[in-house]
Length: 115
Image (spheres, rainbow, N blue to C red):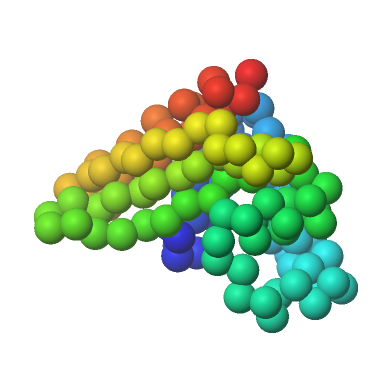
């Protein structure tokens, strides 16, 4: 998910108070220490390895795209220990305002699954 979109989901997840969110700078510091940034991590399996390296229990991975006239955000919550997808959802909106509202709803759905 592009940075300008991912920060919205991150911000909404923080608002739920259900998660300890790892700051991007801290994550990049840990990854650079392990030379992980250069690997081009894009798969779910790679995300699980990344989560283990960062000492996480769960990780949210996702994508952003456009299909015809709708914008889509798809996320999966992955159990880092097992690699199992424990939640998956796609939300869509016709424009940025609608998508922003749907992303807020998505964050609340993720938080309910985590509790």
